[in-house]
Length: 130
Image (cartoon, rainbow, N blue to C red):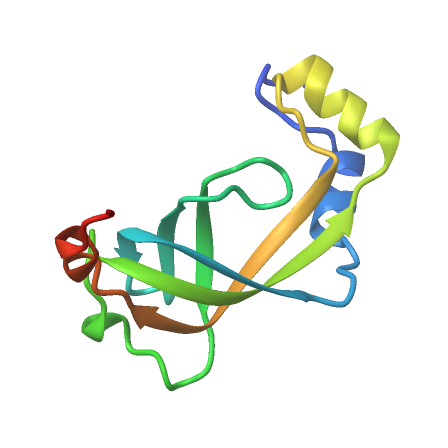
């Protein structure tokens, strides 16, 4: 059987799919929505301050029934409150991904949006410092 160059070995896929997430950490950061994924109930968010692994753009699951994606606005500044779930991956998998796929990854992250608040940034422009 011929393997394609892009194939990821089963042992890597198994570890990633069966990752054990630690207790979530609640985080509050501001940013704006880039994209909506209605079928998956997810949003892409650009954060002003990076999350733990250095990314500024993350995909968040919109959990619970309180937040309706239809009510959200792209490009508007929000304060997001979300749970960050982290699952470490083995050194062996991390080294494989870095060498074979040029992906630097030490852990798997999942982000669950808990709440958000629209921030009125236009009123801040009117303030003048003396």
